[in-house]
Length: 419
View (cartoon, helix red, strand yellow):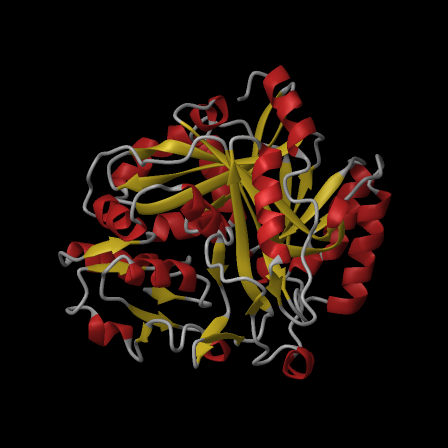
């Protein structure tokens, strides 16, 4: 398991408990202790290539080496350079959607704020500011405008200009449309998509009711379907290209949908976090064997639960910020306590094991993902929050409304014939 940030500890730990030998390498230096005492760690993953029957890359940026290893005869789960570019270069991703005859929202790319402000003056409308390239992980730069004339977007751009100067990099102004944000995703075996399709709804803001700063993710609700109109209109059109590219992995595409159409926003050609942890709660076969079959090019249908799965991020300070002093003061080496013995539905994230206890490590403050499953969304939510109430982590916080949007969103999606 070659991990950029250590986000796939739960996956490595599960594969180990299924009876496989696992080594985990973490690229990010402050995250090196994640998984200590839980899985065998690799100091140099390249030195373990011959040892491994399957190599898993959990993030974008490894596409070139993944392809080279496949060409050398290794089984590899992870991206390609083409797939990496779909995520890392927003402009390329949008142009590929257009090339595959998928309808997209109008957008324009900029490298300085003055040009962007002038553009909004000329074409007043609601816009979303989307950072591109290296700065797209800076969630504080993402801004969703609400004013019809784009006035709020101009004010934000002027503030960015004062704060960042010319260091903002490349960014997009994308037309904003109202609707439901929904993602479709699937595993790909190098030849074709593996059914069923995963349909998921992200909750990105820090606080309930979509308040506060944008985080990577605070929780997700999902279900599995054999067929879906959104998938057919978007990702399915990339099946031939992904096969030509010999892509082996997981790919996700989120969209805004409404009564007028489906408007794709961005690709994630890798595991999503906490998406993969919640998917694991819904997959009813050994995850290690499943990933091996996908990497081996086998065609099969994944055995999944009926109904719904939900999951939340349980976090501690300084999440969602980076602040070493705060982390060391409030969170480092804090112990995870279970009121009653329970590991079902608990997916470790930035943890290590010392004397049988889980301790918080890394530097981000992401402790774990807690999941729930059920025939109905409310049943899945109830189980997730019951499990969460059994966990004691000092100074921890989480969103209390993961899955609440389903009641309204599902009505809209049914009305638009998109479920």
